Image (cartoon, rainbow over all chains, first blue to last red; front, side):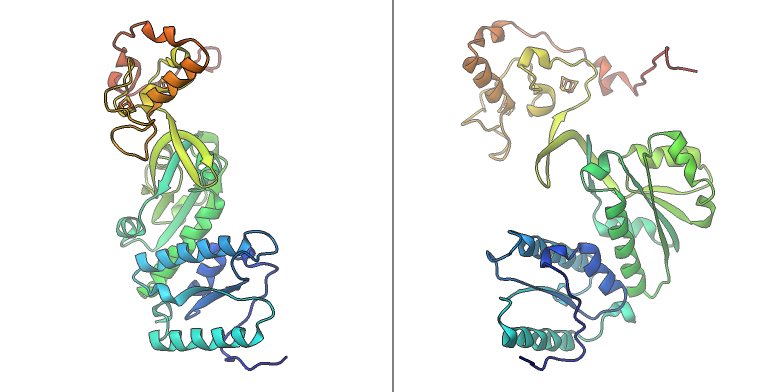
Length: 110
Length: 222
Ligand code: SF4
Ligand code: SF4
């Protein structure tokens, strides 16, 4: 199934959302990304038991950091969807792009 | 271990104002174990500082280095060829670290990035709890290995006080009453009589009240 999603979303694949570290999210912001989100499996359906819950906590940590730096915490987000939900994946990508467009470019790039 | 928490970012940014070349120095001792100042946390703080710098239009030079320990001169020495390249050294070790750095490098500015809180251990992943207050004359053999100095809000040696209720301390429902735990354990083991022995006031001169402390082991001194 080939579904269109916004071309400005760069996808980085990891074996499980639990592999996503705080530093990965921060580095993306540091290197100029206007937003970054983690797409993990549905809660309770992680193949590695709790990878998506760990990712959620790390996303929350980075949101708090952004807030402390007077940056919009909405630039970082966690989404949950099942691996079979192609249309939902494309919809999340569009949602996130719309949200970031609303916020404007990251002040880190100014 | 010595437990610490990272200072609020606003406080760290405020103390770094005006410095453009920053060396963040971690420690592989206690602060690595309590996930506050090891190489991983050094990487995270360095990235945060760079984000803050870029946001404010500053081109900060932020480098990272994690020492085996910051409380031993031989490891602190390893920074000697680096320190001159920085305006400020930000230590992520416990309060001992910035002081050892400051003494070894009198020309450099050495600042703390963490609040050092207590001596304790991990009670679950991500949660640490106080166990010892370093009083200098340990008395926990009287209390079955539980410390009323560090863990009773009033440091009572003849407890509990009247505020103990349902195993909790009167200061908060989130704080266990250590005296409740001591009494329970003595009862379970049929040794409640131990507590009939009156404990006289403690001599606090071995604690902080006696001034800064020092430990000398003659057999090791060279
Ligand atoms: S009695 Fe003193 S040395 Fe012993 S655990 Fe308590 S505070 Fe620490
Ligand atoms: S309630 Fe228990 S822990 Fe709290 S002050 Fe009284 S004896 Fe100490």
